[in-house]
Amino acid sequence: MKFETSCIHAGQRPCPTTGAVMTPIYQTATYVQDGIGKYRGYEYSRTGNPTRAALEACLAELEGGQFGLAFASGLAATDTVLRLLGPGDHVLTGNDVYGGTFRLFERVLRPYGLDFSYVDTTDLDQVKSGLRSNTRMIWLETPTNPLLNVSDISAIAGITHSHRNSPLLVVDNTFATPYLQRPLGLGADIVVHSTTKYLGGHSDIIGGAIVGRDEALLERLAFLQNAVGAVPGPMDCFLVLRGIKTLPVRMDRHSRNAAAIADFLATHPKVDHVLYPFHPSHPQVDVARRQMRSGGGMVSFILKGGAEEARRVAESTQTFALAESLGGVESLIEIPAAMTHASTANSPLAVDPGLVRLSVGIEHVDDLLADLEGALG
Ligand SMILES: *Cc1c(COP(=O)(O)O)cnc(C)c1O
Image 1 (cartoon, rainbow, N blue to C red):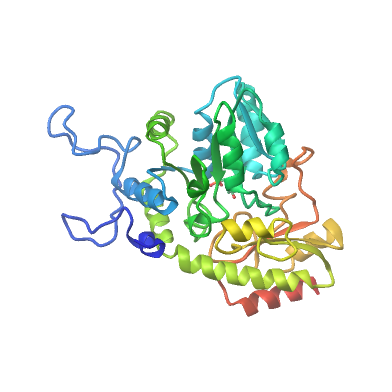
Image 2 (cartoon, rainbow, N blue to C red):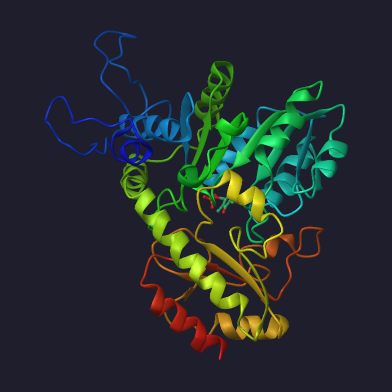
């Protein structure tokens, strides 16, 4: 099946009992046993649930993986992946990962004995020299939130897999989605998502996912999913499945609108510079064009007027709502240093307070351009 067809059908088929075309929301905690230990496939909904199973199979197919596992949030998925490691293990990661990922690494997992170091993953030499004898994982985010830096997944997979430990290469694919970029095909071992964002696509659920291709990893991660228990409910799984059906059409529009907005901002007299993976001014535009289908829906920019001007603009838009999160059909604007990335303040990952981040929605681009023009003017 082509990607667009998989989005609608993968992991799903009409209910054999009722003929329901859409996957039912199996709102149940437990399942009847035909005899002690004689299950019909499900025993308890932390371990497995048919609505969740449909979502997990769909996610696996979209990312080109062998398995998918759904979680209650992107950070729950991240936490579960990190539980593959133990005290004394080192993780090499990017110096502008998502603020919540940084907080989990530093304030929750470091006290348990994991070690993290942060490099510019767009620079392959820094990745090479950052690997240590105890490095067990490379945690890559590309494009990054909120600076939209792009790292070369296949080059980093090459470096990772030639290291004597063969550390696991994990890619947070939240910003790109599998429609724009498929890290497993480029050599990654594991893909992580916040399904809260583009996969859900409608800002109505919090969810996460892990996709991988190795049977031994599946066994370990499925064990952790059940043993730790950060699973999503069936209603949320249904909503992500429904969101995924329109992923390709939404992403095409998100990218088209965002590219037009990046062009507009790049030439606006009040804008210092714009950050957008497919814009010719982007430092990694060649890598982006090689590994992504289009530039995606996120645009960041820095105003000449600095932090004060950034706050004024963010509070002046009408159509762009001032809010955290991203990836929904509606356009959002925010100041990462004061909102989504406040947890990185005073750390090496701190974000420029003059940075404005846009999650460009799928409204008519003329209304979005007019809104920004008004707010900037
Ligand atoms: C939002 C986000 C997360 C965390 O996901 P939640 O669903 O909010 O827990 C992780 N990575 C990236 C890139 C994100 O944007």
